[in-house]
Length: 156
Image 1 (cartoon, rainbow, N blue to C red):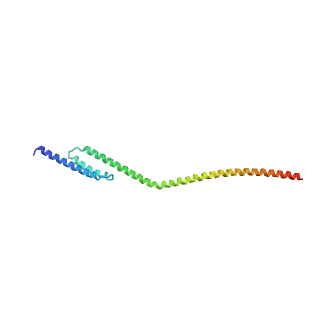
Image 2 (cartoon, helix red, strand yellow):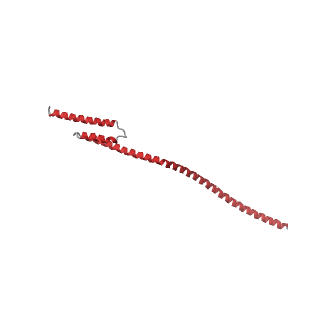
Image 3 (cartoon, rainbow, N blue to C red):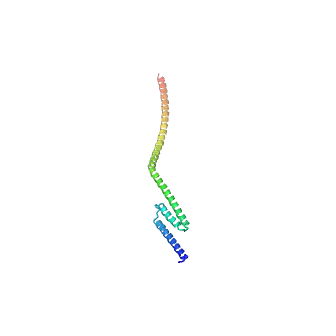
């Protein structure tokens, strides 16, 4: 066996190992969902370290996978934040209902105040008319008294 055959055997073994490792990565990614992407990070890192230790440059693959896991982690954080906000909104629902009720009550109160204001204005106008009518009545009484006094002095 020549040195070239030995080298070919080693290269074939490396190739088989890398293909086998890649097949494992591919299998893990085929079952991947958004819920379990972050959990695969450690398993994939172990496989990548094994592949990297065989003297093959897998830095582009490693870079792509690490970028993917960074995005997956970011996605998980945003989903968690969104979930927290949904919980916060659910907690606020009773307050929102109370606010709607308060707005309704305040609107009703405003309408009643306007109605009362109109009624109050009408009452002021009616009082003013009553005052004018009393003044006219008093003037009429004085006139009647004067006429009665003239009639009684003319009769005497």
